[in-house]
Image (tube, rainbow, N blue to C red; front, side):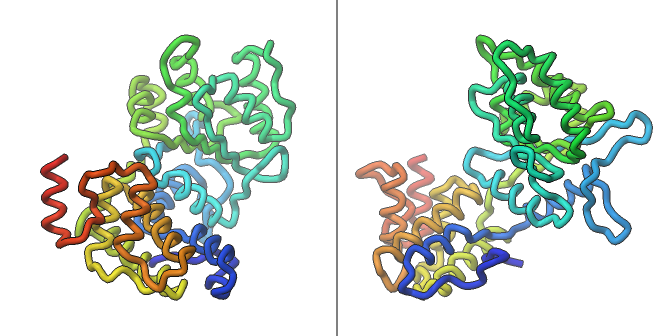
Length: 327
């Protein structure tokens, strides 16, 4: 099933409301097989009720009481965060906790300069606790964070951009970070954990066998294949968005393939590029989305002058061979 609507807006606003129509397009989401896979992973780390619905309770090993962690791995810009956020928000029993407001799961985005101490402090802020002082040590911060998670009944912690936490270099403590990630799954205050990030995250987690074993559930976001289901979904997504916005879809039958090629087969990047191209046609008052709209989007996003692009006129199979030959 292809999802192009939000819970509150089924159709775009009237044609005269350009801002509303842009916002409608921005909010579109292409549901795909990744969503189904992610839901399956959730059913491994969260308990399931008698009616088959997910509960806001972490699955625990009956022998040692440990919870489970999972990794979501994909290249930068490939739609990891959007996919996770969409799917978690669709679970009726899960409620996001923000700065102490009621909720049972927490979302932390790790900054490039983050440390294991700052991660603990960020968790505390999400639970409504005062941010820790600079003098507080990491080993002092984590027991407080764990206590808050237990006290407030947090079941799930999503740590996005987790690879930043495991970077090497001066002042970094990768070993300590791995230990902290492992400890989140142990003891009375243990929670289910989702780690998302680029392939480096999986590589760094794998460097510590004990931590890797506890985060053994891994969803790797796959590339879009020519002729595959995601390619067909993207093509239909573009057509439906255009039709809803009273635009003629591109008349090139290979338009979706051109988009995917331009984005190195990343589904999230391809969706974003397609929406940016449709938006260009919309705001310029055009009646149809064309290769020229895509070409201009490509140029604005860093395409090189004087080089062939995936959106040049001509037969796509021949152009693709030329581009592949040029690397």
